[in-house]
Image (cartoon, rainbow, N blue to C red; front, top):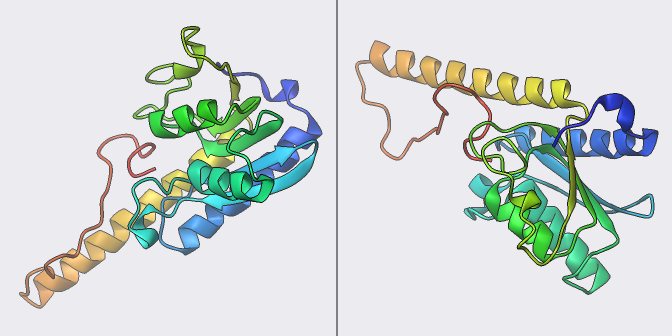
Length: 192
């Protein structure tokens, strides 16, 4: 479900800007730029950014990194008074973790037409059969979050092309094990 930006509060926008800062941290670390922040009663509880590549952990999405920090800090895996702000629509893994933790609300910036499960591909949050119902709303600062992802993938493509061109110029093969995963088509979604 999405909402007009006018429906968001100044506190929502402030929290999403923190998540965007975390997304920039991911980019600087060579990760897909997705960031998250967990808030409780207007206070930052935890932040996170994508780390699957640097940690060799496929579960190290921004939401999960922040969720782990918050649960440890609050000494409880259930976080019913918390809200998560994330720069990209959650995937199935993250959505189920957030529901299991009993999050009150999840706010995302950009939709993810490849793996988003808050309405883009599926809507896991709307299944009334599940034992917890997290409020989900999208579209807050979607343009800057989308632009960040597009710029990241454009830079990655240019880098890969330059490396391939340099290898061809030297008539050398591209080094074994040198992999840069790039999505095909729309830039959003892969390797979130």
